Structures are given as C-alpha cells and as structure tokens.
Length: 474
Image: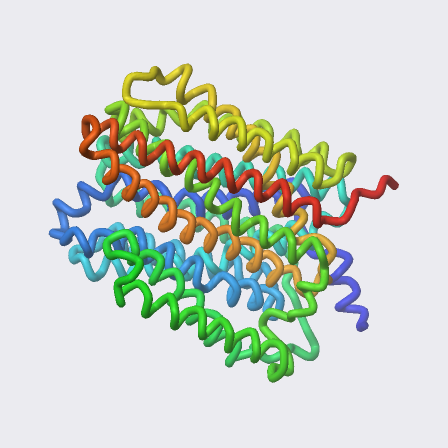
C-alpha cells in the first residue's frame, strides 16, 4: 500500500463529519424527492405538453427504470473512480436534466430528461452510501449516520407528496424540476469542499461485459414488471422482457463467477452473511414500503375521497413517526444488533397491516388509517436503517460503492416487483367483489388484500432475520 493510498483510506473526507453526513443526506433527499414530487404534477404536465396517457406514464417510469437499472454500475463506478467524482458528476447530470425537463416544450424532451435524471440519480445514490461507509467507521457513528440517511429519504418522500401539489398550484409544474438546479449547484460545491478525491495508481478496468449484461438484465426485468400494470402477466409485452431480463441476469452471474478478471459485482461479497441475507430482506421490504405509502395513498383518495394533497397530508404523521424512530433505532443498533430491531419491526408490520386490512369506506381516518399507519411507520423506522446497515456491513472499503448499489438496487427492484404483484392482486380482488357491493367497497376489498399480503411480507422478514449472525457484545 502506498503512502497516498493509506492516507486516502484513513481520511476519506476533507470537511467536518457533520458536513459530510449533511451532504450524503441531502443527496438522498433529492433522489427520493424526485421519485414522488412529479406524481402530483402529472395532470398539469399532460395538459400543457399534450401527452397521451401511455406517454405520460413514462414521465415516472423513465426515471425509475434508469435509476434502478443502473445503480449497480453506479456503485462499481464509485469504487473505481471515487465517491466524490461520482457524486459531482451525478449531481451535475441530475441538475442539467432537471433544467431540460423544466424548459421542455415537447413530450419527448421531458421523457428524455427524466431518463437522464434517473442516470444521474443512479450515480449519486450508491455514492452516498459509500461516503457513509468510508467516512463513519466507528459502529455507533455509522449507525447514527445510517439513521440520518434513512430519515432524509423519509423527508424526501413526505416533501414530495405535499410540495408537488403546492408548487404546481402556486407556481407551475415546471418548478417541480427547476427547483433542483440551484440546490444541485450548492451540493456540487459542498461535495468538492468536504470530500477527498480518490487517486489510484493501478486503476482497475470496468467489467464491460458484466456492466452490459447486468444493467440490461435489470432494465428488462423492471420494464417487463412495469408493463404488467396495463397488460396481463401472460401478455408477451410482460413475459418477453421479464424472461429476457432473467436470462441476461443468469449470463451476468456466469460472467461474474467465471470469466470477469475484475467483476463488477464480486460474488465473494455474498459469502458475507449480512450482505446476502440483508439484500434478500431488502427485496421483501420494497414490497412493504409500496404497500404502506402507495396503496395507503390510493385508499385515502379512492375509498375515503381525499384529494392528492389531502392524502399527502394524511400520511404526514406516519412519515414524521418514521423519521423519529429511524434515528432512535440507529442509536440502539450498536447495542442490540440487528435481530431484535428487525423482529420488533416485523411485529409492527404484522399488527399494523392486519389492523389496516379492516378499513373500509365507512370507517374513519383516525381509528382505521392513522392508528395502523403510525404503527407501520414504527416498523419501517426500526427496519429500514437496520437492513441498510446489515446489508452493507463487513465488506471491504474498496467495495463500499458496489455494496451500496446492491442494497439500493434490491430495495428498488423489490418495490417494482411488489407494486406489480400487489396491484394485480388488488385489481383481481376488486373485480371479484364488483357485483356484491358499491365500486368503492370493491376497491376497499382490493386494498385490504394488499395490506394482508404486506403483513405476510413482514412475517417473512422476521423469519429470514434469524439467518443473520447473532450480536456480539464488545
């Protein structure tokens, strides 16, 4: 090891720790914010730019597709070229594409801008976790950093649900995108000031074959799953991309295991029990998060008759509860280990979703929605930062970026698959109940099934958490 590399490992940042953490949290906030803030603005976007209903969906799906599909590549690039370089490049692309989206005068321009935004987010998101993993090495400090990072994502989701409507109504849908430009400029300056650059004397080449097969496989799989919302699972438009995606991922695994000299995703990482088990649980957690935030919002709007803004405000108490519990759980993690927190969170999922599944059109918000969502939010606060810490612990510092990319990809893919499966189940249940009551009652029955399925996912997380290593007190 050279003196320069030793110095780099010992001192991965140049600014104070609080500034490094604030930077990582702000980047995570922006990534999650942009996943939700656009949704409320979609009717105005369609009216102004003349989108077709199918085309309008790509304003959301284009971002999610490139974001989830490219995170593994973004994570490995952070290891090869340094977190600071990837954060700055990703934020620049994110901000520039936000400017293009805000100034768009045609549907094609806005969709292209959203695709580019997703690429920028895929460069930023794994780098934020790499920054935390390399900057906060002491267990208590790292746990607290994960709690703050997780809470920042919760703030992003909350602000997106509420601010999207306020900005669109008070200003214009264009400011949903344009607001990212000055914020991005500030974050680029903060990254340049607070993070150290990475210099490697013998830079490894990028695993091009693995990058192509892995990225294409994830993108095809996610695209096929997204298509299931408009087409049946037996449709060629769904099965074709899904099968192609699975085959490409099989090829990717073979390439990484046998042929790549410097694999993009070293399979040795999955010999670390926390990495393997943690990522498996993050896949399941993605479905729980979708059931909580997405389907609860639909229940409030389609069953209780709330507006989109009212639904966002109705979910605000749960979002605040999540942020508070996430910080508290992070402080407990070094003392308790992951198992007690995951088992407690799973118990909250089981009780909360079970309670929520009893809601119907004639029930009130406070007793049938607020109570159970607060309980579920406690579970999410206990579980999410704990899973992220478990899934990224124990890996070499040189793999911090790809470990972060793996964890975030697992959560995103789990959310995409969870959304498709749960939406299909809700629609089928609503259709079967259509002749037995009002349309609203049929919708409520579909959402209730979703909540029961989410309770089952919580039980599965509890079972799988027993595979994690026991906590050893120092």
